[in-house]
Length: 106
View 1: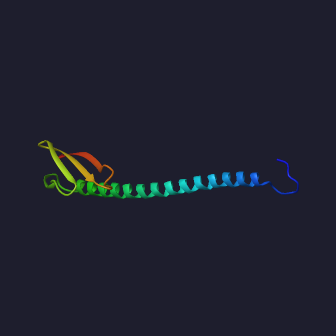
View 2: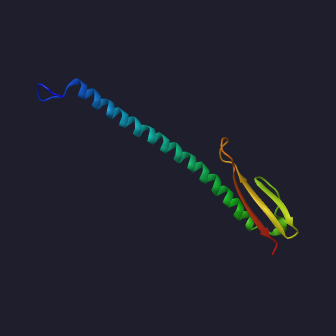
View 3: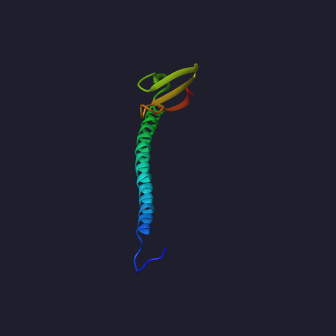
């Protein structure tokens, strides 16, 4: 656009402000989404670590002592084989973390 001096016209300033506002709003949305994602991942990793810790605790337990308990489901596959499922809830709106393994008597 033609100007009569060394400045910008009102239209140029308004368009520039609109573009800048759009860019800043996009960055704000991305920042908000990133922070929410980090928080969710932190909760997930905490529940996963708890499940892995419980699995290691069961691994150290003698075969005959492994029983159903808090977050632990044990199923006899055969007389010398157990299926062990660890369930670790982490959010009400998400399915729980489930770790499943087989444990042999031998």
